[in-house]
View 1 (cartoon, rainbow over the protein chains, first blue to last red):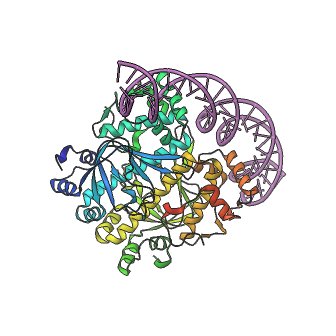
View 2: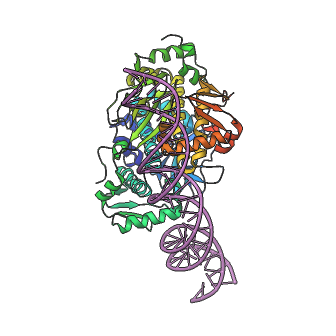
Length: 244
Length: 244
DNA sequence: CGTTACATTGAAGCTTATCAAGTGCAGTGG
DNA sequence: CCACTGCACTTGATAAGCTTCAATGTAACG
């Protein structure tokens, strides 16, 4: 369980409520077996009945759905401190798949332990539900982006959101962040073709707004990007440490 | 609180777990003041800090987000038995707005009562979390539709989903259902223009699949529509009473 | 009976997809 | 060490799908 205070989930939940020693201990006990997963190999498969969820401690994961015609829609990315599969523990089958984008570390959380926590540490439970609500708000914002923003704004918004999320756990700032995604991941997430993703990235780069290259996102003109994307981070509910 | 057993929410939750007398009583007590809202007048406004959520007992509501440029994305529709604003009770501000599509009836649920219920009736709490998980799964499927389905399949999928959801609370079947939406609602929900919605509806009608007219959806060729939409209702997690 | 809200249709044009070809680079095995 | 392979990225040409603009139709309502 190592140093709980510096664990990314603890860090994230602490922006919502200050947790007591006791609550931190309950949270620590929630962390089960620590497992590693290889990049590219699915952890959970669509349609599979899954009894546990995970807390991601290192690396990036994406959750996605495959269509019968083979096209893929990435629903969300998970970064350190995020839950994996929290939504589907209560559903009879997982409605989506998880793919580690790089080699990752995650600890298992048993559904029974989770429900126990709800009865025994209500404040912690509230914090976990807050995180889940925030996750859903991100999916909603993603939906809005795909439905109503053009490709440029969509990309800009996405890059800004990931920056804000990563900065919350200390993995990014207003300069930029490390990002292991390929242009294919971006395409599957944003509902675009990989070819078009390439063109959009070029435009943003040539406009001097942002550079996506060699696994790193560099913000060249942060405010300009915010304006293009009409990015309002209210939905992330992290009024404190936004991008510094 | 009238006849709880026939209340649409009770009916919905019962497809997940059989609730005991005691749990039904707690659920009944959760229902606060019954209120009515006029069609078209917003109930909750984006950015507003909201302390309560609602249980919808009659009528249709949509939840949506407005973009700075004025375009609107409808995130989901709520029908009788659905919660309203459950996701945002824990967030500091509501991240979206609610508009009643017709005159509706809804009962208020206080956040404090809700959290109490979690501690006092764990099985009921699980059922409520199940409903919330299912709502999120619907948003995810909506995201997939907008990102990866063409306009025809998107429309077909939407009409089928609403049919399945309504049949769960006894308001629809394999023949069709009453639907108070305008083509503008459909456009805002599906990420299309109203003009294109009109054309798509015409195509589906002329192909002998569905008719959307005068506030009523009529399935003319249910299986054909399922095939076109590649509709797999697994995500709705309502294995029992799907469309009859 | 004019007004308003919703539905319908045509025409033109833009955004994005698809197809096709080619570059650059890291890893692998001879 | 070098050819070979595979993957990610890049670019151009063409075309589809959908939007926008504009006009018209239709039913309900005060």
